Image 1 (cartoon, chains in turn orange, purple):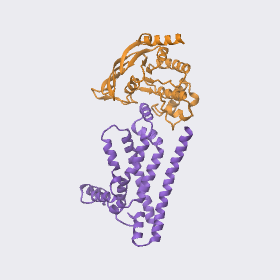
Image 2: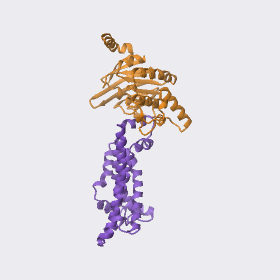
Image 3: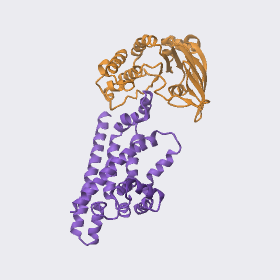
Length: 234
Length: 225
């Protein structure tokens, strides 16, 4: 369970969020510039809010009043962004292995294999990032994020370079793995279809505020009407 | 040719370069990755030797390391001899004098690395030392070569600091620059020409090494594009 109260000003933008995300899978939906990526950066610990508190499963990750701040990498949290950010001087295998703790080569190899297999990228293990397509790089970035076995997985439009069918198939393979390990997942998207396809709880973010939260059919009723009207017109 | 001075110069430049890299890598990483507002002051301090006349720096170090200051007396007591007019003193002076030539290329190299890669490493649990060792240094390897070569060359060619802090003691503080100065003072232009040619050759070789590394980097980038 993720409880957060965030107040942050970045230039002219004001992010003011108070929310509780309890569902295993939550989609944060909103237009570009609504503050979705900024929110994920706060959750991941890459940025600190001016004021606020982020509590995950009862542990305070950030608390401005108590001056608590757990740095990224010690939050049991992974973030996959639209830009895969693979280390260019390392092969795919080393990229995926980078965050796995310990020094046991057997555990490393098993977790790297498992993560790459899950995202359908086992055959890429010896390649360098410059030898990958956009979609392949995103798969590897996802494998790197899950190889560390996080408790909280943050996905910021992670399938943007994959076609719709491939993205759906990947998500379907990922869902049971995440459920089995009790990993809470937040997916950020500005694509209403993604929000409906996942069947997840949806939080609607606009101009730095969450203005609605609940089932996709309820929260995105207007978007649904718009999509249906669009399809009928076509 | 004064081979004693030649090897002493190489030893001084090599040692100075090694110490400088050990200092400059963490310092540059701190300047690039740190959040404190004091870091701007630290960066300015590291750049100070660029604008300070070498003789002024040499004079300050001579006074600081000499028996007139408490610091100098403590150092003398610890080492058993004063740092001024010794090879160790020259190393200290050279490290301070060449500091910006090591720090600035590294700051530029580290700053040019995509911040998303640094974020990714931090998210994967990399602490600062691992972040520097596995991400910053390998991705800024050309800046590291440039920093090493510039530090080495700058130390080889230094004159003011060496003269003020080290004097001109054969086998201890007499470097090639001092040999060249002495040869010119004695109107021995043939010997001065050979010494100058050697210094020039060293500089050209080192710069060719830097630019050839850089050119390989441009070619690799070109192939990717």
